[in-house]
Image 1 (cartoon, one colour):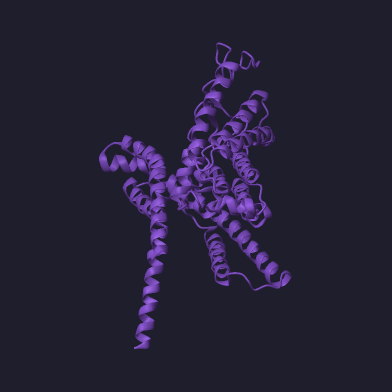
Image 2 (tube, helix red, strand yellow; image 1 turned 90 degrees about the vertical axis):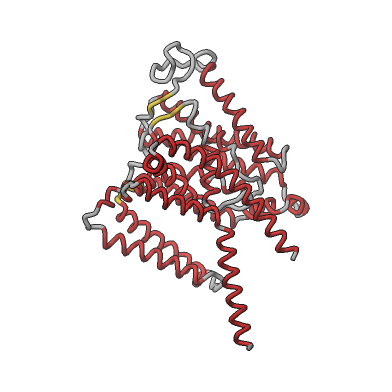
Length: 428
């Protein structure tokens, strides 16, 4: 009888674990199913989808990662990353005017955008400190206001107060920047430094991943002489790295369509550095202050933490990263829509990270990467899926806009529902 009861308890625990896992990941699971259905209906070849996904991931994930730190600091989704995108575009217009091309031009845009992004982030942080509890709404409205100032600058002030005589950039009347600018000088300046096919990239990333894990183990076991780490997790990651290396070695010389999938290595290295930065900053004193402020501002204040200062630093970092991310995005795209490229940055980034399973109170690197993959998979397959299913590609285009805006509302609603369910469980 005792054994039967123990087995029954184990089965209940196992069932409860699976139920909680499905409950916590209902949004990404829903979109995984939608992506699989879309891939099937679109009838697009898998190598083409993979190539598009790699391009879009390298282009967009940096901006999505810029949302993590404000969430950690309890400020929700920072829609004001639009201001960071504007800082990046101001720098790009300046560098295009000065005709500085290639990698030096790209580095100059990063240099010029940095003080603008820091200033915009500081002012945003000061404003959000005045509207505690309403940060997401405030940051969204602030983005609209800043867009008006941005348009005033480039439509009316350039050519009048700000002298600029450049037929490539300025409208024929001599006042205002053109709507579309070709970024031939910095196009692919980061992406084209090193490009490898999918299997070569898997081999390189697998080796780097394994080296990082081995370095972590040596540091923990030999230097720190500690056993306090998740051995199972490290073992699984080592197996994953080994699988990546094995696939890369076996398929490197094979003749396959999948070799059309080209990976911009330096761009992904930059993204990897940002991921490591996010991991590192959480372990620092500042990162602990982000966490404390995010959990309870009153307790943080009583503990001696300067709450307003910490919140401003979180927004400044987010805005700065968004500015750099917009530069990466535009050098890959090769065209700047002067008055439109920045408008949807906050919405699309927020939608992507929410699809990955994040919430307004918790966001991780995994959420950002998985969400970007799922979000852009839908973007790739939806037009043809809509055409094949309903006879109109326009349905797929409408579906894109529906996903971008709808997922934010659905995710926020699900987050509120999860909080209610969790509160009920605690009450029982």
